[in-house]
Image 1 (spheres, one colour):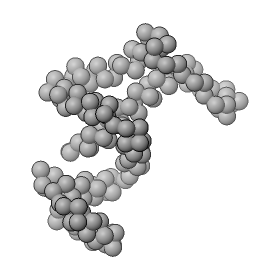
Image 2 (cartoon, one colour):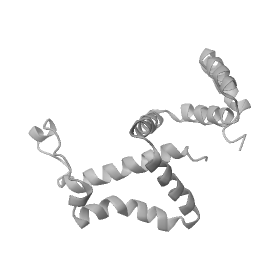
Image 3 (cartoon, helix red, strand yellow):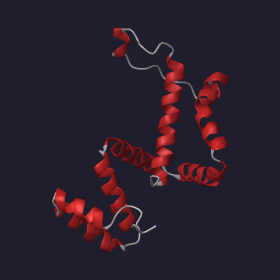
Amino acid sequence: MRTPPPTFRLARLGLLLALAAGTALAGDPTPPPQAATAPAPALPAWEQLSPAQREVLIAPLRERWNANPDERARIYAHAQGWRSMTPEQRARARHGLHRWERMDPERRTQMRALFGQMRTMTPEQRKALRERWRAMTPEQRRAWVQAYPPGAND
């Protein structure tokens, strides 16, 4: 199975860290009914987090780092890439991650195949393929993916 592009992995890591923080700081997982409509309290800046709160945020990354010594250079490079992104680029990456998470497995396979083909194309060729793809029926798309399966260009 191919791994998603770096921006998806980085966005997923950020999302996981945010979810971990919310879980750790929330306390009781079932809020009272009136609290469900109230806005969530603002979380403090990193410097104001307790050591336990920071540990909750960092632990998943530490586990992944220690469990995958061969992946450390890639993890570090992705973290550097995420850090160098503008807020707008990060927002686009998060949006893409959310779209990816909502896709059904067949659609993900199609997108992997398209990405694999487009990464070697010129901008003009990419545009032409996108236009052709949009004009295809679902059956034609399935046939195209069979002809150009994900990972075929790797």
